[in-house]
Structure formats: structure tokens, C-alpha cells
Length: 388
Image (cartoon, rainbow, N blue to C red; front, side):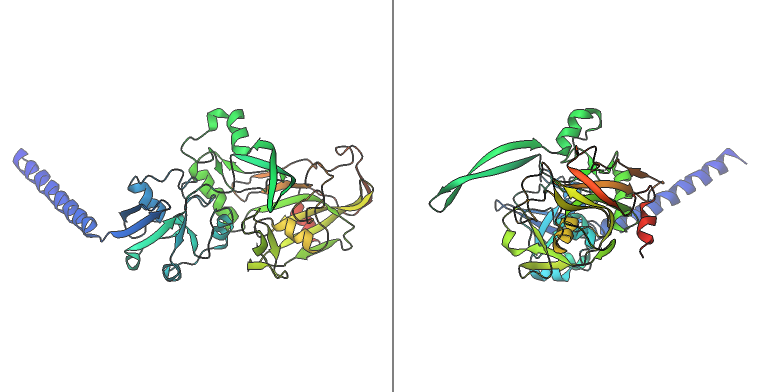
């Protein structure tokens, strides 16, 4: 082959490639951009554009908009920091309704409304062009950097006098001190938290080392592939060895501005109830500090806020030490006796189990079992299937 012919072939090939790329770029450039306006709490309005298929979080990130702390989990659906509020007509017009997992995360959001959504779950379509959303004053979710404990010391007229008796760092602060080399400064809470525990709950918590792992683990939990088990001491003797607790759980209208207490659907104050399922198996019956109590193993099938605590309270067996769901009466125990015992993640064969913290020896004889019903074995699910 002559050099002239080879040069002609290469030139023609490059020209075709260049024309193809120009056509592709023209198609991309002609794609209609969708405008979104973000209304900040201080009155500022910021308008930006995104492509079809982008989420609202993508729009903020791609346009480098200044929303401090927004989208802390980077769209892995493990926080509520991309909380936005929509106009009712826009909320109803969204093509996808919020999933259970999104609603669970919204439980953590401040200034929650009936038209709240997470920005990472709102996907742009052409019909959403011109959409306006409100960004609340704070995007921090309920996993605070510190937890306040308050003691009411009296009343002056119609006002309560409150003194803060303790200020404890939350898990992200503690982990940051222990594992500073794993801290991700780009994340609001420094780590990829896959799920959450109530502040009063001890035990297992899954934290991913990177965004990809977090998304994979979070997806397993959203699809209910993961299995979560808890151990608790509850007041009184649970009469049946196995129970399925199915009362829907919603927000308590009396506590909207308080500690975000939840309640079951049978209570008049219950708003926005959602289906919930907790499975319970009795392990031991005995006495705690001379009062009847039962040690139970619980499988958390759905993941509503305070679900186990509400369900136990609903059947008349409040968790020992649960100040909130005992009507603020159970004050003598040093803690709430609820523990995240085992996690079967459903990813790469990861199964982790802790020791039982509520044994007679570990509680220095305050808990004395008198009847042994079941044993929490490594294969906890088999224990539940026995009663199915």
C-alpha cells in the first residue's frame, strides 16, 4: 500500500469520526435543560438548570450552588439533609411517590411538612421545567453533633425553667476521635452511615468506608434483603412465646414540636400512619429489680421511627428504662434496655452479631431469669421460622 493511499484512508477515517462526534455533541447541546428555583429560608432565590434524569441534588452539585451541608450522604438515601418542601400541586404532580425508605429518612428531617421530599429522590422531567422548591433553614438531620439532656427545675408564671444537665457527643464525633484517618470531611456527619439507631439504643451499626459500599448496603436494606435483630428487656411477663406486632405507626400530633414521639394508629393523636411489622420471640422470663420482666428477641421487618419502642408499648410491655414511651414514668434504670444484637447485611455474606448485654452477670444480678424459653442462636432467623 502506497504512503499516499494510507494517508488518504487515515484522513478520511478521522474526518468521519470528527463528523460523528460533532453530530453527537449537537444532540447533547440541543437537549432541553430544565429550570429549577430553590427558595432559601432567608428569601434568596437561586435558579439553576439540570438535564432530564438528573435529581435535584445533582442540580445543586453540578451547578456548585452554595447550600452548606446539603446532600451529606451524596445521594445514597442514608440521611435527610437534601430535604425540600414543594407546593402541594407540584408535590402531587411528581411522577414517583416517596418510597418507604425515603419516608423513613424524612422522619429525621427538621421542619417536616405534608409536601416534604428528599432532593436526591426527585428526578427531573420536561414537565417539571420551572419547578420551585423551598429549602428549609437547616438541612441538618436529627443525628445531631451532640445530645442534650434536660432537667426541669420549676415554673415561673407560664414559663418552664430548664437547666441542661449533660451534653454528650454523638457517634460521628466519637468515631472521628477514634478513627481520624477514616473521617470524610466532605460528609456532614463525617462517615457513610448506612442506617441509624435511636439515641437510646446500643449495639451494631453499619458504616461504609466509601460511597459505592454505602449505596450497595443501603440498597439491601431498602429492599429488605438485610435482616436486623434486637434484644430487649420489657416490663411484665409476655404471655405468648411469639408475637407479630403489626399496628401501623404514625406521628404523635401532640409532640410535633417536642421530641418527635411516634404513636400507633389506634391513638386519636396519630397522624400519617404507615404499615409496620415487628416480630417478637420470648427468650427468658424473670424479674428486673424485683419487678416482672421478659427478655425478648425482636426482628425489625420494617423500619419506622421508634418502631420497636412503640410496638412494645402498644402491647403493654414497655421497654425497661424507656422514659418517653412509659409516659415519662420509668426513670430508675440507668439506660433503655434495647440493643441492636445481630445484622445480616445481605451483601457479600456479611453477618455480625454482638454478645447479649442483658445477662444476669452483666447486669450485676439486677436481672434474674426464672424461665428459659428460647436461646438466641447464631441463626436467629431459624428461631423465628419455628413460629411461622
